[in-house]
Image (tube, rainbow, N blue to C red; front, side):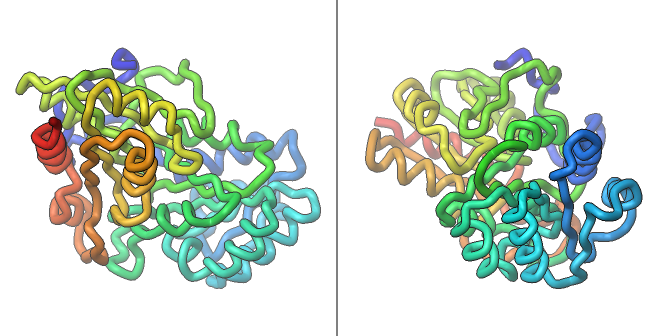
Length: 330
């Protein structure tokens, strides 16, 4: 609830560096290294993801449990699937667009179809990787969500990423984790909260509107809600860390209690979180649903703050969508 939020004022991109933050990209590997000490099933595969940081430490400590396939993501998925079929729990470390798109055939057939415990860790997701249009991972939510048997998780911060890793350790089927390139602001002041796959978290309560956010945009949604509160608008913020399976119970509760919803994601609005929420409510409890994200475009090259601003992916952009949704209420 609201008391867990780590910041109370409005948050803009210039302030992100002022908040103590840790990189989920590093922390999940550190967590796996600790789990690997007691569980010999843990294996990491990489597609030339570099030898530095926590990946390098894992490789040095467990040389027989780190497989580097080179820049060949399709091979990486095939190798990972083979090991999973032989009792291993395999984590694929790779850059988001290449695992989600270049290796999609193998993910579809070798992993999802066989429903095996392969964990795809899509780092550098969203619009902050710095690689330009070919390297921005903004279609993955739609792609991965469409695969039968695939669970799709986008943690809101690095500490929640660790909770997700632990919660899915014995998960029987495939899981796709979506995390950013660098550090994200910590959303919760304490980690003493329950985390369950498929069960969203009400990060902030409100009565006039609900913002359903995922991943990096949970922090910005809280910032937008705090700004709207100064205008007398009471906003509920839901941390939808699991896009599939969607927490339809909490979505329906929010729809009935607030009467309008904004979804926000650092991804294409087609097929992702916004589509999932709109599809569900369209068949069960039709109310205004306004989607916020990338509107069917490729990414643009530039520094992350400027790129995000160009798409309106900031607190002001979320607030504008919130006012649009409220105006649509009957």
